Image 1 (tube, protein in one colour):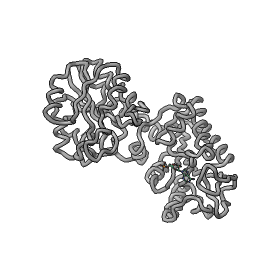
Image 2 (tube, rainbow, N blue to C red):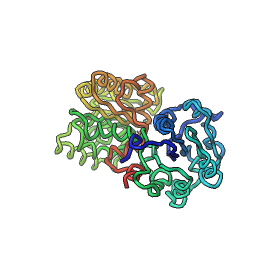
Image 3 (spheres, rainbow, N blue to C red):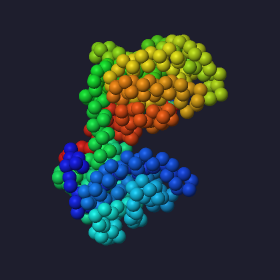
Image 4 (tube, protein in one colour):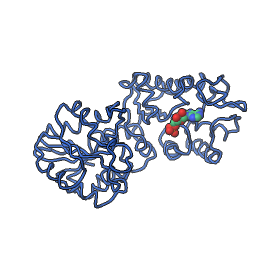
Length: 397
Ligand code: AMP
């Protein structure tokens, strides 16, 4: 896969797919500019070489051309982050865009309108992809890791209209791929993965792939109860996927055969209802009374996990340990974040990804301690599953 350092953009125009799917408040102000900041190194490199940049992205899930999803709303923030005026055209393809691209000078940046105003984008329509490819850019750069698992027109299909010397991964995409590989395939042992979240069903592929990669697999969050039940524990009214009990048994057997140490909660914070106002108590993980549900890991489990993390050289974390949205059940998730921060300071390589885990790490002020925080949700999960992402594959084909 070609990267930006392989290319000198002097006098060239680069069409860059970025992920500017940023949150906006009711006045259409950007409330979190992480994704814009993440695209900056790629834009800077092209401009520094003496090239010009055409930015394209999606924003939200518009059903048609809806002004509330117009990318013009992000212009003030984009101009602030990039420190220069940015041109904007209210379309993604067509005569006006082509004309503006033609007149674009070195050092200039043009932002196109929301790609998803065209339903063809998500359908991976070839004609739409070709129209984007024909706008007049010399290079196609994909820097949208967050959508690299989608075979959309601008994320994958477009790449076929550029030969392999005229398409490359942007700096963010490159960093994501190398950071994930560093943890997953080249991780120094012991490698420990902590996987949480609501359901086993959404992370089966991740768990199965991790069994080939890690020494310790810690399973927490809602999905742990399906495993606990599979082992014959009484889980009361905790969240469970009964149709995945056999699969949980199979995974545990597979882990044993592969010599992977699977760690499940040994104690839990249980609640008499799904609420931050619920009554709570701490019980051992094999004995949740009926009428009660487990909503977080308990103190012994937090300690057990901390111990494993401190003794790991590589740590991968995706998914919360409990219903962290309720302050009463956020301790487990926060404790995992703190443990990873501490281990990272001592030299472990840590990769954290997924909205909830990243939010926890940010809230705890640990962003600088974690070795790499992935910007991808679904894309990261598919990488952890060992899948080849269409947006990445298309750059090498
Ligand atoms: P996911 O999107 O699969 O990563 O799951 C995240 C969601 O799992 C969060 O909204 C948590 O509130 C939820 N969750 C974590 N632990 C539990 C639990 N013990 N019971 C119910 N939901 C949970």
